[in-house]
Image (tube, rainbow, N blue to C red):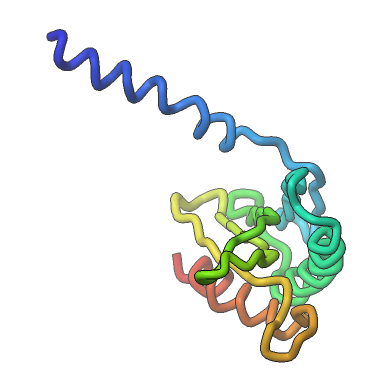
Length: 148
C-alpha cells in the first residue's frame, strides 16, 4: 500500500502549477458575435516593449478576422477563442521571436484546437497581415472545429 501512496503524493505535488495556469483569468473578454467570445490572456511582464506593440496590433487584426470568419451560434455550441502572447527562442542563436498562441473550443465538444503564429513575417520583414492571420486561424482552428 505504501508504494501506491508515494506516486499519488508525488503527482499531487506536481498538479498545482497546472491547475493555476488552467484557472488563470483573462485580462479582457470580447464578444465577437452572440456566443463567440475572445479571451485575451495577460501579457507576461518579461515580454519586451517592442513585442507588446506588435501583439496589440495583432489583436486588432485577429478580432477582425474572427468577426469575418465566424457567425452567431447557439448557446449550446458557444465558441471560445483564447489568445496568449509568448516569446519563443528560435534556432541555435536562441533568437527571441514574438508568438501568439491561439486555443479554441466549442462548449458542446471535448476537443480543443491550437494554433501558433509569429507576429512578424520574416520573409517580408513586416508584421503579419490579416491574410496570414486568417490562413492560420481557418486552417488550424476554425475548419477542424467545424468538423468536430
